[in-house]
Image: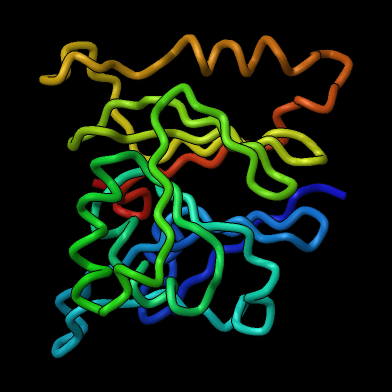
Amino acid sequence: DFVTLHQVLHFLEDPARALAEAARILEPGGRLLIVDCGVLFPEDSQPGVDLILPDFDYIRERLDQVEALVLTHAHEDHIGAVPHLAPLVDGPIYGTPLTLALLESKLREHGLEDSTECVPVRPGERVDIGPFAVEFIRVTHSMPDCVALAIHTPVGVIVHTGDFKMDQLPLDGRVTDLNAFARLGDEAGFPVPTAEFVRGLMRRTYRLETPE
């Protein structure tokens, strides 16, 4: 079977914008890997709303199937809802050192710093998580220590770019690892698919629904 992707989010008045955010869930063979868990910020048409949290109903009856939560970077729309998800699942949280450092204060605010397992990873590492092998790839964004993910599953590879920009002169000197993306294409076994065949690309385009 193909990997199925589910957007987990509470839709309010703007589902087009909602689909651009959210948590992503990969679930080959009934095991779940969650990528990012952020919040949305209200529009002018939503007075009195401070934050919009994901709707966890899809996984609420399947919490024992969640292997882990993997974070791409520490912006609020990617980690803001983690303290609301962490008490529900037993799996660890993987992220780069800066991402986990910024998450730590949120966990502490909710009294979760001792009960939540956070596992630091660095770009270039590949970590086995249940039936998944997650490869962390450095990307440049508007904050440091961001990664894309190459998620190796029993049915192929899903590449999740995370948020990125093509900046060849970042302040920290750490540019997007284009060689890693090229290698993923070379390993695909085209035209004969292999176990490493890239099944899909998840790429977020900010404000896609706004024509201007």
